[in-house]
Length: 244
Image (cartoon, rainbow, N blue to C red; front, side, top):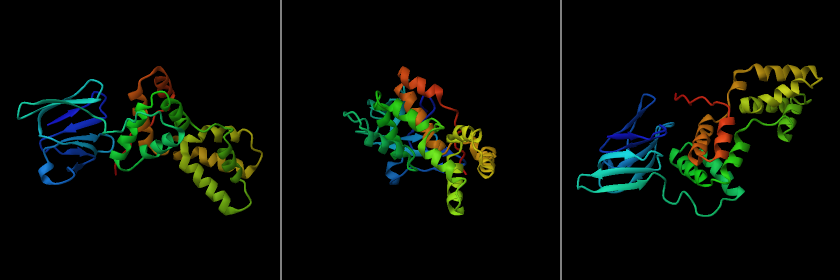
């Protein structure tokens, strides 16, 4: 059996269900004896993010906000459990170092690590929106790091020019506004040519690390405050990752 959260981000399965995504079957972790356990999956990645101990459910459903699961067992018990990993939402207000660590975890290839970070950031209601806005918005034209990379496009040493070009390609749409601004000001024919090449490349329309950006959008949806909604509404669209 399975239940999908209202926003379509989480899938709960039980009684031996497997999650099928991208043409692949995601089999349960652990021993076969755990096959009937209640398990929670991230739909974006198709990975299991949380497992609940206890008797296998015979019926289950998400709460409207996706923060709880209601399920019944064969013994007749009815249980309500939170969908957050234990201890993920800390009681203390996170400092900058903690927010940076959670941002790094949000991009983890291990969806369970990323989900824990998503929940923790969602609990930082007063601090997360402004922090995520800084991480998600395109680099400003006057950003010191971006200015340095653009200047290196016209460097004398080939290895410096190549490294700058490769980094700007990697950052894609994140730096496109700054590249356009620089193009209107540069007087170097070589620098202008490279800026035009960067802006014409397909990568200029794609933000790096789309899975982390989509998870960050989920954090803002989870917070749901006016400030979080403002930040979310200002974000450029990010395509859903396509699995190979």
